[in-house]
Image (cartoon, rainbow, N blue to C red; front, side, top):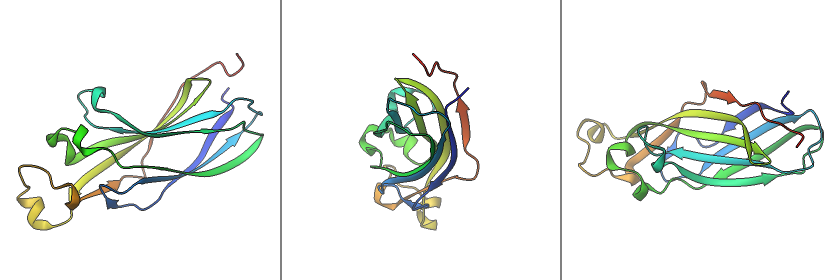
Amino acid sequence: MAKIHINDVTIGKNPSPFSSPFEFQITFECTEELNEDLEWKIIYVGSAESDAFDQVLDSVLVGPVPLGRHTFVFQAKSPDSSQIRDEDLVGVTVVLLTCSYKDREFVRVGYYVNNEYTEEEMKENPPARPAIEKLQRNILHSKPRVTRFKIDWND
């Protein structure tokens, strides 16, 4: 049985410019005291075709974790647009929030992200090379995809 349960994730500053930092307020419950740190990561999926374009935007260690409810704000820089192919910069992608204990991932929360131009003219006639400064990021926070993995918490 999992010793950590995510109760809530609130996304800050949404929608926001593409180059703005990501911000997640995470509330979780610890049902048994953990002596080791939890490792949280924010991962930006740069392409649906290959994880070679994924970017770990930041990781943070939280712990040791006592019994009870905990809340923290996790901020991460925006993805490096030079590491994303032009055809993948505009449109829908995913941002992942993961948590691991002793290097074992036990939960992954995925959110769809829509990167689009705010100006109607640019939507209808997008430039050949994406204009990062004109892109807006909108995280679909109402329908996260949560995947849980069984791990051995004790060894």
